[in-house]
Figure 1 (tube, rainbow over the protein chains, first blue to last red):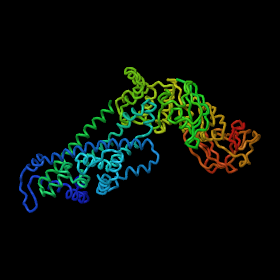
Figure 2: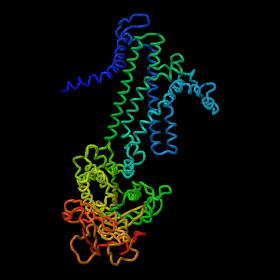
Figure 3: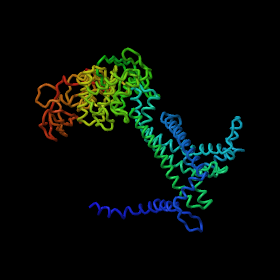
Length: 292
Length: 343
C-alpha cells in the first residue's frame, strides 16, 4: 500500500526533484570533480587529486583573503546583532513616529547592493564626498579608503552593516513583539529591574531568533562579494580581498577553474564550521541561561 | 495581609475616562469580586491597584500606606494573570523562585517557601517541568503558587479561570475559594462571569461604565439590586424587566412613585393557582428543559417577553395559553429614567 502510494506520488514530485538535482546537486558534484582537476580554457582537464586544495591553502593571497573575510564577518555580524537588538527593543518599547521610523530603518534592504556601493562611494569620496567634507569641517580624520587598506576595511564593514541591519532588526523585532506583555508585568510584580527582566525574560526568549538571525547572517556575510568588488576590487594590492573575490579572480581573471572550484568548497566548509560552532555555543548559552 | 482602600480613584486614557471615581474599602482577609461587562473598567481598576496602570487622581492605600506612585514590586501584592504569564523558559520551580530571588531572599528560605506552596497546591510532581508540559489547570496552580510563595498582603486575580474549560473552571473556582479562606489573604478578583462572582465573593462590586453600581454580599445584590443595570446583570437567566407603561393590561396594583420598570426574577413566577398576586397571561413561545428546571419563554399579552424558571418539566407545551402570576413581594421597582430602585 505504502509503496504503491509512493509510486503514485512520484510523478507529481518529479519536477521539483529534477529542478533541485539540476540546479543544486549536479553543479555541486561537478564542482567537486572540477576541484580535483587542473583545468582552463582550451585545455583538457587533468586529474591532480587534492593538489588544488593544497595550492589554495598555501597561497598567501588566499590566507589573507580568508583572514579578511573572517574579520569582516565576525565584526560586522556582531555589531549588526547588537545594533539590531538595541533597535528592536527601542521600537518595542514605544517610539514616536514608529511607522515612519520603521520604513526608514528598513529602507536599506530595498536598495540594490550596486546602487548602495555607488551611493557610499560618493558619500565617502576622499575629495568631494559630503561625509568626508563634514568630517574635515569638524576637524576629524577622514576615511582614506582608496589608499589605506584598514580604512577600506572599515568602510566595507560599515557598508555591509548598513545594508543588512534591516534583516537582523526585523527578525529580532518580530520575535520581541511575540513575547507576551503580561510576562513583563509579571516580572515587574516579581520585583525584576529593567536589566533583570532583559536578562531573564527578553534574552532567553529571543534566543532562538538570535540564533536564526546570526546563522543566516554568517552565511550571507561569508559570501560577501559585491561590496568589496565594487568598492576596492580587493585592492590596494589585494589587501582587502575576501574569499569570494579571490574565487572570482581565480576563475575569471586567471581562468584557473580547478583552484576556483577548490576555493568554493573550502568556502562552504569554512562557513559551515563557523556557523555550526557558533550555533552550538549559543544554544548551550541559551539553555544554560534558562537553567541558571 | 492588609486592608485596601480606594478613595475617589480615577483613570483617564488621554481624555477618555476609564475609571470614574471609585470609593471602596476592602477589609483585611476579605475576598472582593469586581464584576461587570467588558469595558466596564474592572480590569483597569485591578491593574491600578497592582501598579501596572498609573493613577490619574485619587488615593490608593494598601495597609494604610499610600501606594499610588509606588512600583508594583514594592506594593506587597501578587497577581494571577488571565494567561497565567508563566515564564516559558523556566521550570515550575524557577517560576516560583523568581520573585523571591529578585528580592534577595536567602536560599533556604526560598526552598522552604517553594516546598510549602507546592504542597498546598499539589504541584510537587511537576516542579522540574516547563510550563508548556503542563495542562491548563496545572498552569493555573503554578500561577497561584507564584502568588502565594511571596506571602503578600493581597492577591489580585485578573479573570484567572477564563482560559479553562467549563468543568475545570468550576473545580478551580472551589479551590481558589478554599485556598483564600485557608490563607486568609485579602483578595480582589476580577471576572465577567456572574456565577463565578456570586460563588467566590464575600462582597460583590458590580461595575458599569467605569463606576460602581452596587456593593454588597452576593445575596444582597441578588435580592435587592439597587439599579436596573445590576438587576439585569446578576442572575441567570436574567431578571425580566418589564416596562409598566407598555404592559398596561397587567394589574400591577399600587406601585411606588416614579416606578417605570418592574423586575421579576424568573424563579419568582408561580404556575400554581393563587388567589392573590399579580396575574401574567400570555403564550408559551419556547421551552428550554435543563434538567432540574425548565426555562419557559412567554410572550405576554402586552407584547413583552418574559422568562419563567419552572421546577422539573414545565407541564405546558409550546403554543399554550397560560395564566401565571407573581407575589407582589417579589416585584423589584425601578425608575426608568435614573435606573434607581424605587421601593
